[in-house]
Image 1 (cartoon, helix red, strand yellow):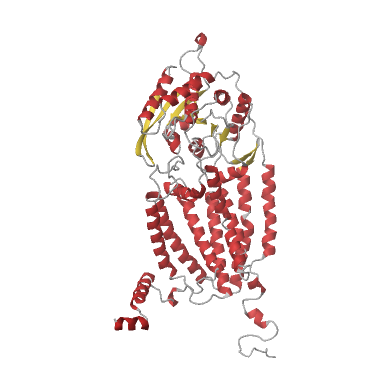
Image 2 (spheres, helix red, strand yellow):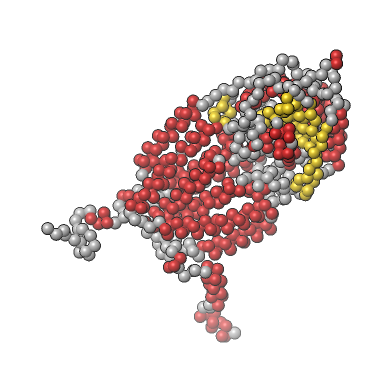
Length: 634
């Protein structure tokens, strides 16, 4: 018995035969398996439950047996004298030289021999200047060191009586308690650890002196903890700065011990960043505090300050709170005694979220963020599998995405080069541009014009390969979505390999854009809103910088300056441009501008530059009949 065939002879006849032969139907109209994606979210509950069980309460180190002897009146007098005598202590100025000698003279009174480390650094608007770190050492029974630092410079716009004459004066007074000269009764305290007192330079310009000490000093390699004093005599509440130059946190025991000593000596619990801001600091590591370089290289370090997160104006302070200076000075001395008491901190810096007096382990937070990728990955892979089952060709979509990647790669080279050498003031490589520098986040206007022209030229060349020659079919659009979503998944895996915390900026785009294929038949406004929602992650970063550092609309430019200076790793910047390439493909699909046939063999623009030039020449040569008649009459 023979089978009946369709009139065309191409396949079996009968009800539903056309549906089976055509790669369409409900799977095309609803390409994302919503039930599968929703069900996968149940897997994320397991890491969340595990994270809840990792909550711990670190215990502070015991208080020292001897009470602190910090003299608040002496420290206040020293701070005022220092600020009055050297109101301009900007690196490279004569005041900076005098301030360095003043510090050495103060320690010489107590029998300290000081070492000076002189080095050069580039400052925006000042060029290469000479800087000086001054180091004094009180020998201990162990070569392991406890380091106390305070920067003594300012930017020259104000005396900085609090920022940071107070920290410098406190450093002198703390050193006096462990001076080599014998104390009353001929007794001289001998610490269990070597105590290192460092007066750094360039603290107002991106913690340059602290970064130098952390990278070059043998004492930094032997340090069990670093305590940084920055403007500790202000009227605001004390605050601990925990952020670092990399995705790390200081040892939780150090933070908890510092909190306990401050409470004991001042009656106030020091503030710190909220859990969300700590997560953002881990996702995008940034700090101008001197603890940053130490924590980045694995040394537990914290900065104690009374400055708000947005001090305004910088270094213009002229008043001191003697009671605050005395209380925090005693707290730092007691903290030093606790660290010197014999119990060692965890030598490695980890990452965590400090909430109240408890912590959530960083690896548990990372596990939750990585698990949050699973629903997206399942949905994207299922979409790819559907395309393969229906034999929808993916090669044209991949070529389309490749063309976009080439343009954004070209844009990345131009923008990164301009950010380093053209747009922003020249600064020390690898360090953040200080916010105190005028126009630190304002790019050069001429540089922007040149950059815009080069980018526009690259776009005109590249777009020739992406101009739609005909309307794209539903199947071709589906392939375009699949290629873009798979590219986003690959970018997410690279983010996991570099910094899993940064997924917080990527996840909104993954889940907003995963549903774009589902919304291909929705109104343009709905598709546009869904696409815009994918930018919530980067917007969170920009808004956070704008609000925390008072940058306003210049936050985006300041972030770009961090990339240009090398403070932000190059790989992170390149991943951001790859993300933009995938976003561009999705935008073209949603706007109906997707190039459905990017097969280069079928296109006339094999030489896009020549094609553009030829079109411009022809456009100039062509004239309308009316123009010809007017030319003849004339």
